[in-house]
Length: 380
Ligand SMILES: C[S@@+](CC[C@H](N)C(=O)[O-])C[C@H]1O[C@@H](n2cnc3c(N)ncnc32)[C@H](O)[C@@H]1O
Image 1 (spheres, rainbow, N blue to C red):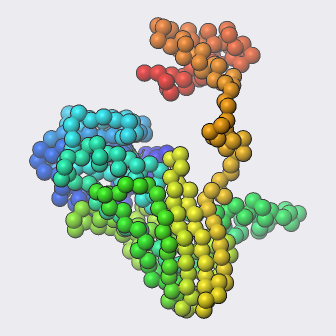
Image 2 (image 1 turned 30 degrees about the vertical axis):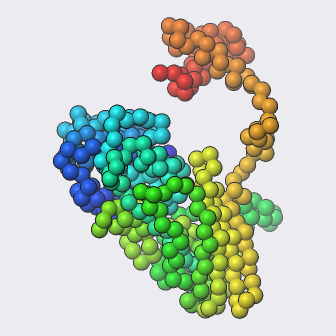
Image 3 (image 1 turned 180 degrees about the horizontal axis):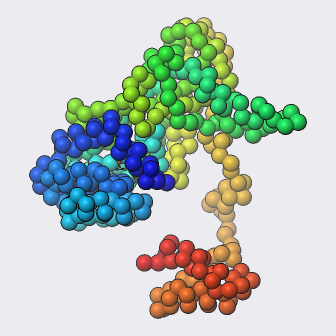
């Protein structure tokens, strides 16, 4: 969930923002019709108006859209932007657009519903010959020496533990989670490897399955793999998160190994990398082998699935043969729904709830929040 600080920091990232401004300058023509997906506080929609767009559709699921509306009025373009609070996949537009602009990425472009949203918007809203910003992201990876970063994993549940308790079990989960990092050129033990190109005019799947393979350039203690992306927003307008480039808001991803491994120059490092979108979140898998002269010295199998604290009962409830029963919350929700659309105001519904479920709501005021939540989810 983005905060106003988050949006502000994205706009304050000069390298990212200058690239978006240049790309918009190159792509928006007087009279253009533009779609800004994930407008946030409205920055690209407002810029598109300033550059001469005739009509801008600005879609945003977050309530930050209220701030975007104010910013549009402050910049005299409120009448040209239609703001729509929703996920783009649930929106219909009255016309096709010339330009779709977005930045729905996280640390990597494989982030939440980014790719499905782009595929959907491109197929439903983009004019033939229309322009996508960004045009293309490329993904890169290298093997890294990162003792401090690794220490941030290995020290937890191991140092300063009262009574010297054995906390290996919780600690072992940690190494299946990756985190945002900064990495310098000196920390890279291999040349960067280009392992995926996301061409947004063509892309048709949100998932990734690739084999990365490097030869170590120099000896050093390897702690894991670092991934990042660079972007071509439009012809001639690029930015990069590569080590050695100025740090951008996105950062890079550090995928730790289960143990540090001493790497000799000439070692082969193989990583089978998968990213699968499941229920709006990516499950990452990175299986790594370190091979010296044909002999496998280390073989790690890691997945963010193992780092998730999964409730077994919740998982069972997702099975196709599970027969569900309505719980008390469901009964209350369905009662509240039955009172909506009958000219009852919120207080009247809360009073009826308290009368029928006195154990749960000793007074009608105790029922107000529950009624509000149902109205938020199902009311209009
Ligand atoms: C990284 S912010 C970008 C904000 C702004 N466009 C910018 O460039 O500074 C991404 C925004 O997209 C929104 N978002 C992500 N996917 C979306 C979708 N499919 N439809 C609508 N909003 C979406 C998020 O809520 C978030 O506010």
